[in-house]
Image 1: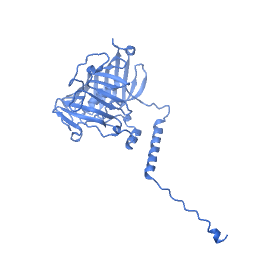
Image 2: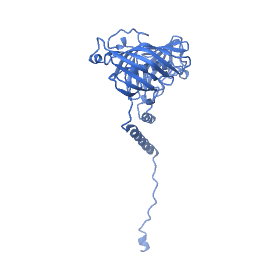
Image 3: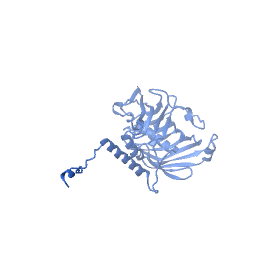
Length: 349
């Protein structure tokens, strides 16, 4: 082959290193990780039981009492410590990459013991307002509304009360009239706390006297340096899911400086959906500083129909449900039919 022919041939070029688009590569890895997480958490063996979100009367009362006690915790851990189920790795991942609504990834809600009373407004020497605007105490649990906190012993922003009688009531803006507040659970259940509707809108039309400011509230009584009682007078509901009017007082057994307390006694609950009246008994129910929900003990709610009960309510006459607490935010629920299930508590109110 002559040189002229050889010149027609070209040596193969050395392979070029591909250019890496950092942003595209990172996004691809993120998507792959998300899909992996979905497969891991979405596919499980048939022997695994996934806890369901509790919406029982007993559970809602437990969360309402827990919210009241947490609001009067000297370390102000109100609603800031949720059960293990409150952290969902997929939700946290989406939040990190701003792939969920802003309200579900917003900053923390104001508390009385925040630095310099951040987000807290003074109304008077005995009243302050905390304004929630889609803010969160934990991942994917936004709150909305203005909570007015009062203390007969005096209260100031930045210092949490530990004496006197402490009240909590949702109001219409700063120093407003009784109103409502909302919280969205970690799985998206919106709960309304109603401190305004007459007679707590109970199905039976029973007269329930107002307790504060022409409306209703939650109250915690301090005796010395420890809490001695908690009173719940509130309507709590989630449209299409549950509707409970709660009214009554419970005793709190606590020593000064303790990290836990035991709640006992009975409280009345109106199951407004089934139109049946219940009596909830607290059996050595223990709350810890680090959790909004009971960590041990049980709550049994017995139901009795009334002259205003519907067919469902009449069928539930004499039936009992029991919630036995197994840890922070976990419990075993025994329904009115006797069936048992593992449930997750997520309504800290």
